[in-house]
Structures are given as C-alpha cells and as structure tokens.
Image 1 (cartoon, protein in one colour):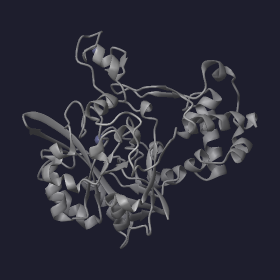
Image 2 (tube, rainbow, N blue to C red; image 1 turned 90 degrees about the vertical axis):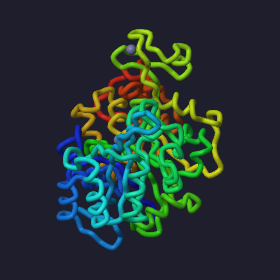
Image 3 (cartoon, helix red, strand yellow; image 1 turned 180 degrees about the horizontal axis):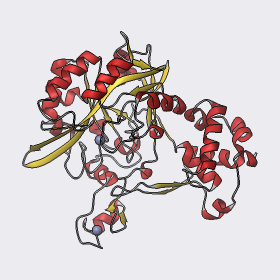
Image 4 (tube, rainbow, N blue to C red; image 1 turned 180 degrees about the vertical axis):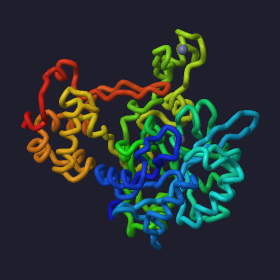
Length: 412
Ligand SMILES: [Zn+2]
Ligand SMILES: [Zn+2]
C-alpha cells in the first residue's frame, strides 16, 4: 500500500512552535494534506508523551492512532559536545517502535539534559553516545541526521558539523540508514556524494505549525502499515519500499545560498569563492549555505544520477500557487477560500497537486492549471534563500502577475 509519511514535526512543547500543534489539529491537517503517517514529534517531552499515551490508541503495529490518523513515535534532539577541539551541534531524529521503548529512552536521555525545557531538548552527549544508548534500549530505534546540510545544527553543517557520517558516528555509521535532506537540499545535490549512495534520502516538513505539515514528505510502498515495515523500508534500500519523495525546490529553503541576511548579501558558491568567504558589507565571514557545502564535499559533478536513485518530485505549497494565480497574499481571505474549495473538490492537497489537466482546468481554471504545469516542468523562476531567509519560487512574471482575477474558477 502507498503511504505518504511526514516523520519529522514538532508539538506545542517545542520552542517557537504554534500552540495549535496538538493531536486534534495534527490529525486534521495531516488529512487535509494527504498524509497517511505522521511523526508525533517531541516524544522526549514528558507532557507530550503522557498525552500520546492517554489520548491515542496503541496497537501491535507499533504506531499510534488518533481520530483515524496514524502516528509514528518521533523526536528530535540537539546533541551539543566537543569533538577534536571543535564545538559540535547536531540535530538528530529518533524513531521509536513503542511508547514503552520511548519511555526507556527518555529515562536514559534525561540524565543528559532537561527534557522538560524544550520539545527538542539539548543533550550533553555525542552522536556516538546517543546511538550507543538508543540501540542498547532497542535495535529497532532509528537515528536519522535531521536537515543534514543546514549551517547550524546539522551533521554536514558549515558551522558545527562534520565532513562525513564516519567522522560523526564512528563505528555507528553502519547504523545510520537514512539522512533527512532538509528544505534547502534535494536528492540530486546529495547524489553528488558517492558516500551517501548507501543511505536513504528522506524528506520531512520539520513543521512548527499545522498548515506546514507535509511541505516535504516520503512516499512509501509498504506491505502493512506497521513500524517493522517502515523500519524495513528505511533500512533496506535495495527493497525499494521508499518509492519517491516530495521536495521543495531547494532554492526555496532558508539556507540554499551563502550570505548575510542583515547585509542583504546573497551569494552563489562561485561568488562566495570570489569574495573569499567574506561579506562585502560588514567584512565578516558569510554564513555558508547548503549548496556550497555540497560542492565542498562532493566527489561527483552536478547532474550525476546514481544507479539506485529514488525518484522525487518538486512541489510548491498549494496556498502559494493559489496566491500567485490570484496575485494576492497567501494569508488573504480569497486565497484561503480557494484553498478550502479545492481541498473539498479533490480530497486533499497532494490530490490537487497531482490532479490531471482536465479536472484542474475544469475546477481550478486555466491560470491555476498553467501554474501546476510550469511547476511540473520546472519552468519557474527561483530566487535562492540564504542565511535564514526563505527563497522564492515565482511562477508568473511581473506582466503576467498583473493580469488580476477574482477567483480561480473565473478562469475556467
Ligand atoms: Zn532541527
Ligand atoms: Zn555582512
């Protein structure tokens, strides 16, 4: 069966997240998006795991259910430690086969940091120690480097990361079966490192608010909807149970290019080299983004496709597409109304984004259908994100954008 999974989100117990990140809204929005399996996020937080235990139905599958939505126990931890004289800060995703095992893991991790302070706790332990403890508690626990390329807090990050999985995980490298590519990188960028051929490239939303669930996701082909099957799909790449991933255009992510947000400087890797990594405005070192790091560590040219590559699709969030088709703000009432109308019509967001031309034209109009076609063909203008500022995907040029309209239907 085909299951669309988003395995990395946060609850309301993480810092800087929406109060709405509760089971009710999570299930509701997962359905609106077309997600069939959602990470719980934050199982390390005592209050959240308590809620999960009380409010969800637990079965032999290893997943939890709430209001018809399936949840996989997931968490993200921030390991902060010194290695080889350098301060390392690494975010790691944990997936866990049962509440009991998650509780045992929490007991062990509570000795390394305050789990109550943040749904994404900071732990004074190395990635190696974390693997050691998690795998000792259960061989079925999964450790997955989160947003593997972002400058801060990631395994390959320019600020506090490593140059290889081996350097970070040592003897536990073999237990790292997947990495999360993050919003600012896509599979083709990761294919440029032969060392990553072995691992699965997963995509998740890392969402802090209900509406952003599923902005990136994984499409699995599972025999049954169980944790064991998911584990198998992630660990046994040759079985090809990861069918496809849904990706942001990496340019839209916050750290694709290098630069300084405050100085309004955005550089490609080539420009950064020309400026020797220094900001021409403030004369301080630039924040080196994801593309530069990939180029630094790559052993293959851009465009290389490995034999066992998993296919992927670039998606743009539906609200953004509607906003551009209507030439209005994504937060406007008109966009909101059209969004709900299309969800009602097609069933969920992924269904709208994948609808055939005929129904799109009929129900959403010519301009919207044209937008979807351009996204599918990659014929969009991309302005790369840098130093924490999101990039932009521009579907219609300025002249086209001015051709205002009132509703999508009006363009039928
Ligand atoms: Zn993170
Ligand atoms: Zn600067």
